[in-house]
Image 1: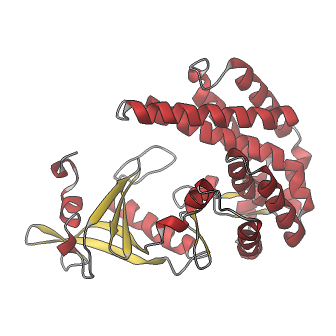
Image 2: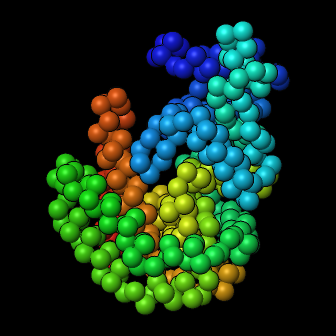
Image 3: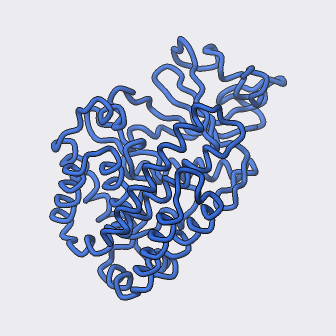
Length: 338
């Protein structure tokens, strides 16, 4: 893609001279919601002006607010990474990083982590150990103990509130049944299982009464973890509270499912055993299977959506569908376990 297809400020920040610190080259990574610039020892993350309903970055003020929220929330787990808010200013008609004058964009400045220590890379090399899992538990247990709890947050733990997140997945994927990634049998089995658990209001009320609904991470899996000199867990969901206000069981289920997805069943079981033991939360197991099923289905849905995007190339489409199929198979195995 030619540089001129990017916003003017991104074009400017693709030049190493745009930064006040040493930069040999700048690498741009795009997601559907962000521009991420890897520049020397730092990472600069800017939000795209998009509005997906559940996420609204459509105005400069909203993007600034979400950047501030991203800093505040992620500093709970790794203050060393989230360095501060940056702005791009219009100076003599040109975009300048942290210049003077009118701010035209806001972003988040982060410390760059060693890529070879990203948890996904560690898993791919077959190097994830029980010691890593123990370290994750040691970070997560105090995080949830200190995470905010309130009557408002508790409301997100009811069966009715949880059903909003769970049932919308079935509505959004119904049109994909039979495309090679999701079968009618899987769809029926998973949706039937999910509804049967959601009908057990007592299970959800018990978790609320135990104080287990917290302001969590919301996106806790290997793509957002770095195993370097210590455990760094980053990139929590800042843009919508209903994806972050949840049962601790839902949050840890995402990582347990992720380990299962990578064929690391024993480490997944160890993670849950140690977490329940250290957090003194054995009732978490009563909803664990439900939430691992939910998390696997969400990842499958994302794979379907990616493959359906006309902008993606055939190879990405093929990989996305293959991953989606694997996630739906995993979700169905949880549903059958029930």
